[in-house]
Image 1: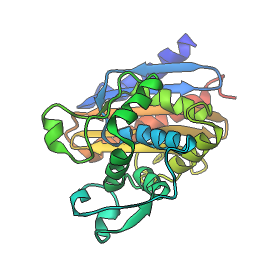
Image 2: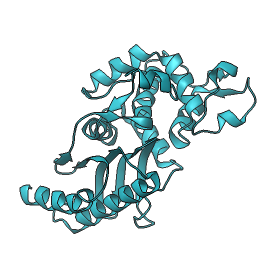
Image 3: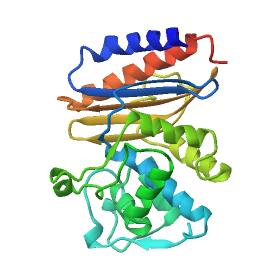
Image 4: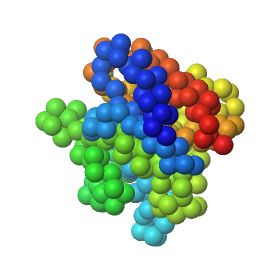
Length: 267
């Protein structure tokens, strides 16, 4: 598989070497254990951290510590800007735990995420992250807490850690077979399709989570094609133009798709 790693690296470097900003990428083919990553260092996670919050929520549901039907209201103190639809609804609106998880992933809703962080607990979420072997990932602040970020308490992850989590979900050994299948289904309902899925054929299934902050654009997920499945994580930071950054991620995603489609081990 060394030749395949070299081929993939050359294809991707031909794009990223000419781009401003910092890129980290990871690719895995579960059927044969092929792995390739570049820049595994931790970066600002943006909304990729929500993958790990979702896993802890499902973990607590599986052990009956958390009832998915529990109604959680949000109040004036919970209002934050950024992505999501809850900010457009009246204060006092209730959503169930299951609905909050769905909104956190499919709409990247920041109010939903903060409600779940408060409910689950930062230390508990980080303990889950540690148990998954994701040593380059940590939750240190709520969404949109830029004061904490400026004070050096930002949320971090790496392309390698995200792939590790996605591998567990794909192999149904993250929380449990039923919970993992449900989480994959939620990821498939992601509404932001402007990065990994953008340039892929219409019959490709992408179960993914996006993330963005000023200067940073990420996307990571499970890509199911007619020839098989691969896992992908693309992270970027220090970008001068976010729209161009999103286009580069879409381009890298298509390169990886074509590489996988043309390899001899994808069946």
